[in-house]
Amino acid sequence: MRKYSIIAIALFTIIAVLAGCGSSSGSKTEGSSSKGDLTIAVVGPMTGDGAEYGKAFKEGAELAVSKFNNQGGYNGQKVKLIYGDDKNDPKEAANVAQKIASNSEVLAVIGHWSSSATFAGIPIYERNKVPMITPTASHPDLTKEETKWIFRSSTTQDMEGKNLADFAVNKLKKKKIAVLYINTDWGQSNASAFKKYAEQFGAEVTVYDSYPPGQNIDYTSALTKVKGTNPDLLYLGSLYNEGTLIIKQAKEMGLQADFMGASPFASDGFLAAGDAVEGVYLDSLYYPEADNERVKTFVAEFREMFGHEAGYFNALAHDATTAVLEGLKQGGPTRQGIRDAMEKLKGFPVVTGEIVFDEKRDDTNKPYYNLKVENGAFVLVK
Picture 1 (cartoon, rainbow, N blue to C red):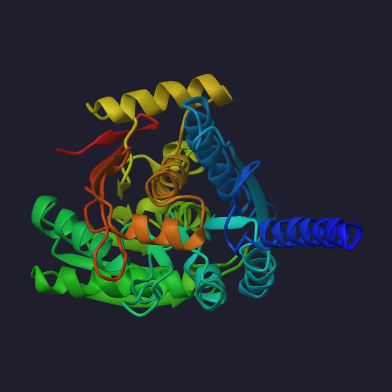
Picture 2: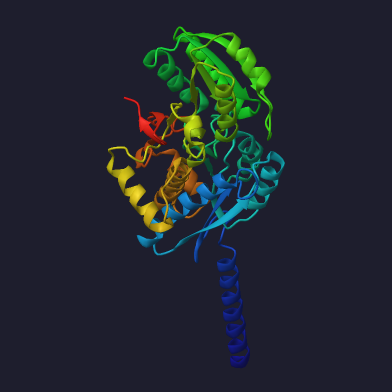
């Protein structure tokens, strides 16, 4: 009997140990991490025509993560970044979003760059309960109260349209304004908001016309129509590359008007056009010469890390990443924890202002800088 008792006790001990091991291995839930590096994804156009924006996302996120890790990470755990290339194409954006959302190691996503690509990814992140924050996509319909996992750290087109219209009509005293815009989700939203507020402020919109996206477009027809109305301002709902071409062609045609664009003009690529863009007005959420200690620190840290000056999209990506890292710090290393903590951010300081998320998880607290190109640089218009 004593022999059988010893055998029974041994078997019981083995079963208990195995059960304990089974419990331990099954304790990790999807979208969480308990050891090793903590993974965050950055998604944007890493190749193709928009690769400069993907590069800006990558650099801005890397600076934020580097600072976070140097300060100890999350209870000693480091954050690592992985990258997804959506090529600024909605179909590819959906494929990348599905791949990332299916990876249980990924705790959150910074991306995408354009509104069209972001629209494609949103239902996938929402369905898989992955917190996603876009640093740049600004179509007003991207965020909704019911999409609980989607955040935006930039402003909407409606907010920017109101600022630009106020700049044009009330500050620059422009009363006859022509509007040309790229026929994309972003361009339509951008131009519509500007037109709405410009008319509310008392301006006459003399032309409201679109042009197709793509390279080597001839804008002669649209610009001939604009010139015929003799506006005192041509507003361009354009990215900087086609905006540069339109402005050059308009000046060659003898259009006697000032020019204004939106925040995508805040790029070294736009300034590279030299005399052609001299005098153009724009706005931006980031101004490196601002008398602000957070901006000055960011400019210095970015220059030290990358060896060149920080741009508009670097700053926006840095701030979006910082918001995710604060969500991690406060909510813990799970998708749910990060989402819930980010939603509560109110007055959280970043380079471009202080984050205040509203009921749609839009940041409603970003101030604009009104700028003008003078002597090959962006200068503040006071």
